[in-house]
Amino acid sequence: MKTRILISSVLLLTNLATGFAQGGTCGENLAWTLENGTLTIGGTGEMPDYSHPDSAPWYSYRSSITTVVIEKGVTSIGDEAFSGCHSLTSITIPDGVTSIGYEAFSYCDSLTSITLPDGVTSIGDWAFEDCNSLTSITLPDGVTSIGDWAFYGCSGLTSITIPDGVTRIGEQAFYGCSGLTSITIPDGVTRIGEQAFYGCSGLTSITIPGCMESIEDEAFYGCSALASITIPDGVTSIGHSAFGGCSSLTAIRVENGNINYSSAAGILFNKNKTTLFSCPRRKTGNYTIPNSVISIESSAFAGCSGLTSITIPDGVTSIGGWAFAGCRGLASITIPDGVTSIGERAFSGCSRLTSITLPDGVTSIGFRAFYECHGLTSITIPNSVTSIGAWAFFECSSLTSITIPSSVTSIGEIAFYKCRSLTSITLPDGVTSIGDRAFYKCSSLASITLPDGVTRIGYGAFQNCISLTSITI
Image (cartoon, rainbow, N blue to C red; front, side, top):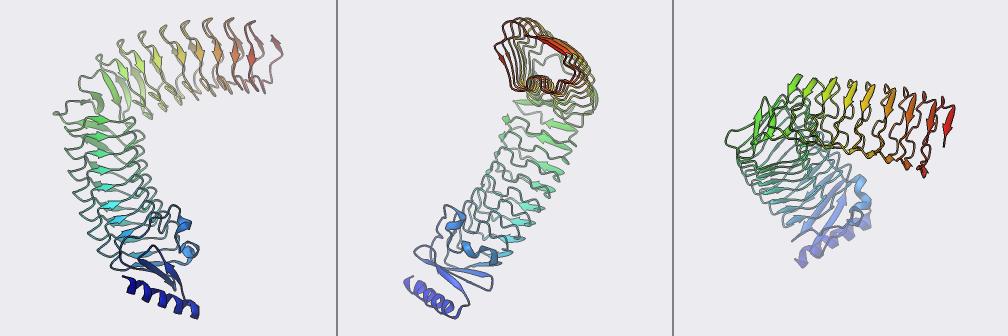
């Protein structure tokens, strides 16, 4: 061991003396040399972990490194060892290496291919982050887990083989791998992490194995080419917006043996159909929600721009955040009297929605609830509402008038921002606070009366209300 280091040191000193190479030691038992763009690392044992890329001894030469040769005897690739080596195009890893460290090759954006030896069992978090020239990689059979963010931003990756021993695909593992067209998930995988395939816009098909238990939040969000998906019997948990943004998705199917979920007309429900989880974005026309449903979950219809009307049954009591966000074709909707809660952004971007009546049980209008509902001309707010949230009616440019009930005590910031058609508004006596830019650029607003109880008028609350001729305070 000491002999190897001594020889490497002699070679290093010789090279340095003649001006051909740089080099040194890395850890107790390894040495490195850099000559003509090739970084060679030799010795015996583990490569050190580096807390930051600039702590690697070859960091200052990283722009000239085009090839890395790791000699036999090295057993690991340390954390952040080659991070930021933008000119690196190829690397040789010997059979004895068993682990790839955290951010080991992150931002190596010229690396086109890599072969991992059979002995590798662990791939660290962020290991190949933003290696956007990497087109393919074969993971050896010994790998049991793919770390969080392992291939994050590898937009050039077109194929990858996941070995049978893998049981978990980490959080954001393939985030933004837009070139990936298909992937086979082996039978041993029980969990797909949060945003694991987020933004894999080229992914046309995927088979979820029968032993899968958990599909986490936004796991397949933005997989815009994915046409259909089948949920196997073993799945017990599907996270928020797991299939959100899948603009080509026509159906979500659940196998009959699943005891937690069910599907009807391609729409995902819980087993007894009391909760509606997700409607495929390609759903068009009119849709009547089954009478058994009492809860519409977050993002359930988000982005269903082809739906023109939705009938909500009387039993529904809650509408989750983003529930109908981006339903640009939705012209009308009736919210049943039993609804007490409407989540944030629930109807944001419903640009064809012309009018809506909120039931008496609703107590607040949430953050950006009707954000950019450009076609909304009128809304009825019940006396039960006590607050109008920030950005609630942002750029509702067709809204001409609104009656705020006496129960309301606060109007959030930017609540009526750029409601350019709004000509008049009456604030009830109970209002004590008007948020920043609440009526900014309400260019048709001619007059306003502020009640006695107002103690705060926010910054720019009436800024650029160019038609405002009178105000009573």
